[in-house]
Amino acid sequence: MRVLIAEDQALLRDGLTRMLTAYGFEVTATVSDGAGLAAELIAVRPDIAVVDVRLPPTFTDEGLRAAIAARRAVPGLPVLVLSQYVERLYARELLADRGGAVGYLLKDRIAEVRQFVDALRQVAAGATLIDPEVVTRLVQRQDALTTLTPREQDVLRLMAEGHSNAAVAERLVITEKSVSNLINSLFAKLGLPASASHHRRVMAVLTYLDHR
Image (cartoon, rainbow, N blue to C red; front, side, top):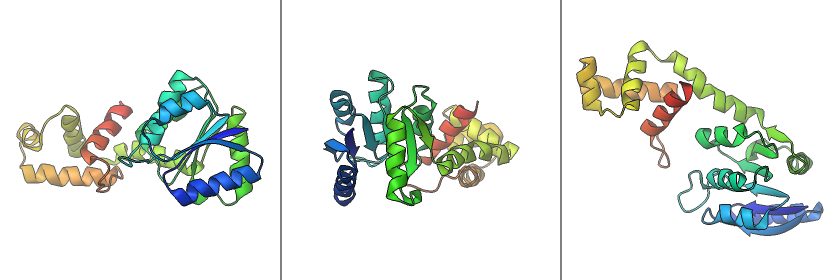
């Protein structure tokens, strides 16, 4: 079975290569960044690709976006996402693909090598495998919208319409400080901690739009 590995950490990439080789897989290509990953997936057309979510150069969601692009070009191209992170927006798009042969596992929840090898073979055979924790994290933010107060929902709606804090304050007849406090509150409820790799305002709006 031919495998492509997309992983930026050299030790993990080498470890996966050695482990899979020992289990009879043929690692035909390894990729360390997101640049050209989709093109490589399409060119190699492996029996299964193991793809991390966050790859250089930006360490955000290059791996997922490349997997989605490759599966659009080659429907049903088997991809197993192996990551520490659940990137909600693109994870939903990848897992919503009804072509099968897709999986999403969290690195720190794989208890033994045999479990991972079996997952690879199942996805390569056309199965869809999703770590229960991934499902939980995808659902949590949607459920969190119901915990927003009416005023927080008004603020989020106006943010989704593209209004600045000042414009939101003007429309709701409150101070900009109050708007800022409401935004910080809804960020917390939606599970959006401060992050260097994501704009929380954008992610909050995407959550709102996806729920509509």
